[in-house]
Figure 1 (tube, rainbow, N blue to C red):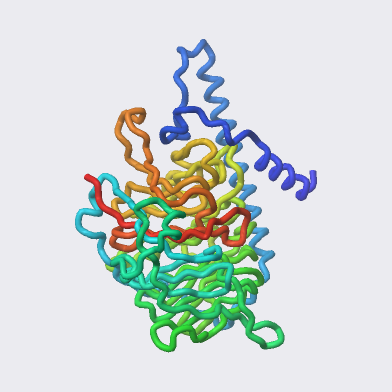
Figure 2 (cartoon, rainbow, N blue to C red):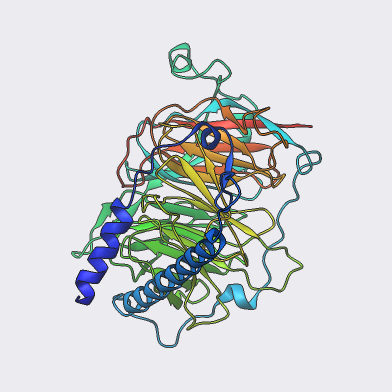
Length: 471
């Protein structure tokens, strides 16, 4: 069998290997360990040998699958069309300490759960593909299909400076009464081949913790660097290396570097001091959908790991200290469709959560191998999980799917049938959630609706939530 035919056969098995939508009641109401199994009668003579043989075959198959995946990553790394800078920039996250983050508010870090209530609606007539906020959530920035970057005054909004009209309130739940206060906006302009400015949809955003500058992803593959605090909306520079829309941007923990992910399958690390590439992470086989740095503290000198995910469900973990090492890859569970648009870390940086198309979230634990340690099963027909975020207590995971936004308790009571392991957060219903922002103190949360340029509907809703701890 040729290599192409072998890869096609693997892809066909991955895509059509089984039915992923049939969930039993236990799976719907609780967390299912992939290592667990049903109780059986005492084994017949010779059954233990057969079971051991089956386990050996399964282990051998997993080893072969891992080798095939590694070979595919190596081949993919050679096909990326990225021109590296010479000399390269500095990998700043490996050389500098991360900035000090604000502590979680008193009572919010050790609570059992949260009461999350939507109280604010930011009126926006178009899809919002990306959102970002400064460290203290004083300013919130959004961008989407209309080709404008908008700055919202969150303090004025949460204090009720402007209220929704009666007609605007009809579209939301009763608790939503405050209207978002827009402070400024500017054209998200790119430069075409003729040298003229053209509007581009905003596919991704991130902002400096003190609002000194902002970065945005464009349709052409360019990354815009914008001044915010002084001469707001002035385009400082266009960084050009990607060939297709830039779908993800993450400023490094030290705030001197930037990681970008694009539809061209490339993940790039930029040194913002000189505007040069420091490293290209080559290994994904589809459009990049998520990039997250491992949580670290200002006192820690350890280089954070980099988590990346792509739309085909591939999830990779990179050690930035080893420039030529292949990444660790987290495998898709059996019968899981190859798809993912969001991944996040646990608060302690020891676990990874990946949203899937089949109403589920896979949990991976560092040092426990490439298979998920458990899967969180949402109710049937809830839709793909498009966005994830971790709350300050480390046990409440926010999961956004097509029907609702849910808060999942990762440490449920011993009797899992005694209580549903999640609670529905009112506000959103229908449409893809493009982003979930939780401020550093865990007192506020924001959600935006948009498909980020991929398949999915949007109701253009942008909501703000006030969060209270529950003991």
